[in-house]
Length: 181
Image (cartoon, rainbow, N blue to C red; front, side):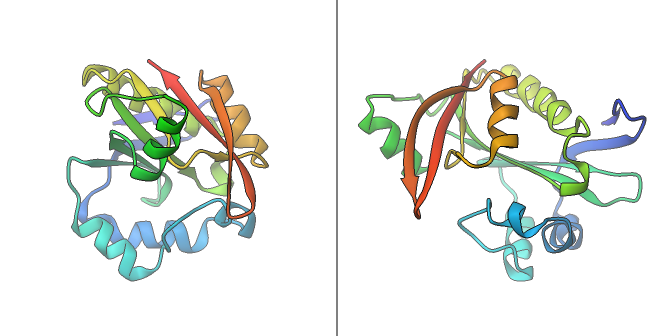
């Protein structure tokens, strides 16, 4: 579906397609600063990984993309049913248990040039609308968010995510955050 951002630019938001492998590779290869790339993990975004992602699309992980007028991917967001094992264990240690059927794990990314354009808010609205229709009640940040990523932390707070707790991973402070729909 097509949407107009507040800056007048028109984008398309849809699910990733098998044929998007080259566009997705270009997105991760060219559209991020070293700082932004340092926020990703745990996998690499090399050509083989991208081909695997595009060739194994399924219902367990929905992959939303935003496409600009030139046909380039400018945002890529994952929504996985339930929680990833590492997050689930960490939350359970805090006596926080989320039902697999009514919770999802969320991992967003937006190309540097498009950050602060409203695309994150727009995609957040589109994705949340889809999730509500599916009976989802909780969105959990995939692997949390790095505490030093102030733009992201601010974005999540603005959109109703609540801070749960801090945890250390690879020498970095991270926040677990959850949104109740």
